[in-house]
Amino acid sequence: MFLSEVTASSRHYVDRLFDLDPQKVLQGVIDMKNAVIGNNKQKANLIVLGAVPRLLYLLQQETSSTELRTECAVVLGSLAMGTENNVKSLLDCHIIPALLQGLLSPDLKFIEACLRCLRTIFISPVTPEDLLYTDATVIPHLMALLSRSRYTQEYICQIFSHCCKGPDHQTILFNHGAVQNIAHLLVSTSYKVRMQALKCFSVLAFENPQVSMTLVNVSVDGELLPQIFVKMLQRDKPIEMQLTSAKCAFINVAALRAPVWAKPGACAVFQLDHDLKHAHELRQAAFKLYASLGANDEDIRKKPILESGAIELLCSLTQSENLALRVNGIWALMNMAFQAEQKIKSDILRGLSTEQLFQLLSDSDVNVLMKTLGLLRNLLSTRPHIDHIMSTHGKQIMQAVTLILEGEHNIEVKEQTLCILANIADGTTAKELIMTNDDILQKIKYYMSHSNAKLQLAAMFCISNLIWNEEEGSQERQDKLRDMGIVDILHKLSQSSDPNLCDK
Image (cartoon, rainbow, N blue to C red):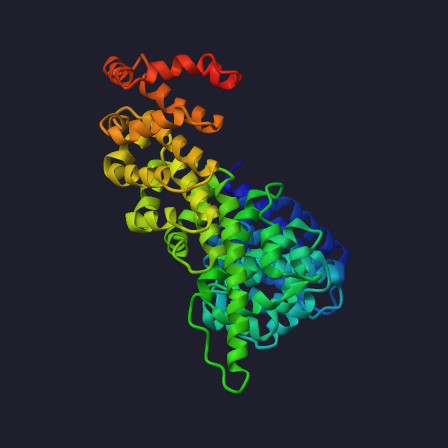
């Protein structure tokens, strides 16, 4: 079809908007709606031919039927879904004031159509966010419309999350009750509403202690918001929801790390203690969140967590005097290290520092110790990673292993430590750090003859990885271990009544 024919066809749609028969005008708008769906060329033609001013005129006329006004809003929304140039043309025609005026209508379907169009325009990068705040009556009216339907809830939350770009916008929304009005939407039956409410909270609380402190104290159906965020982290929830929930908790944690504002009056000390208590609760929720997130999959690890500087934050939390924060901080790092790429592992080791690693391995709480050993075990997995990490941190890690095996620890702790040695023994070059350390070899030999079968098995895994026939230097390693009497112990274990020991 030639351009002149396309233009003539488009002109026909525009001409029908000026018909004197209201019913023909309505049908013309409906036909136009069907014509522009998924057709950017048709949208551009209609804009050039002047359809927008006429549609806005019909939308604002009180003599227009509600159905006509609604259909006009739908067509305008469809035009806005085209290119950025389309949106610029709509803005030049002052579409936003017209649509905002339409929100005063008593008709819900028309209101929803106006909001849907506003949402499409405001999410465009060419739309200035300040246009939402020009008229001081708009925000309170939008808050009031949140209760009308799930569509008003979805669109308004989306508008807020795209138009909240700094502290001034946050303050306006906060002062008009955004936290309280949006909180209950987190338990909506509509997934889209819950998601938009989550996104709204993530921008409202960003680097804003006032909003974050308020969020901590808000409850919905008897549950505090941090608890709701954690529930949204469950693995049966969509990944988008898990990521946004994590972002909300993390932003609140970051904001609550800022100094609590001074409060005048006799209640200042009590209020400060109260606020700090909730700050701890939120932080604990956040680190449980990151710990479980890190365990999910590699995509999630790469997406909320790493890009937002979580490794540095989690490493710093392992130094906290609060036990729960130490446990959850190291637990999160342990899960993030599981099957992670080498850079992530190196970042974790760099963030922790050798001194802090030894501090954690000396922690009086067994949970901290076990999670730290779990972290080391996850860091030392896959041969290239094992060899790389042991080439840079081998001396310190071997000292840590020695420290644990010589200490007064339970069976589980020592078993985990021997498993770390088995991982090191699986490295190509790393295994030499064991073979050249007679003290460690003697300890492995000792645990092969231990009274606990779990420790015997873990020690034999070390030996098995050291003597593997297909690897270079295996004969020399076998000879050294034979000279140490390892073969004699293996013969005895082959006669063991424990089938696991016997098979190994």
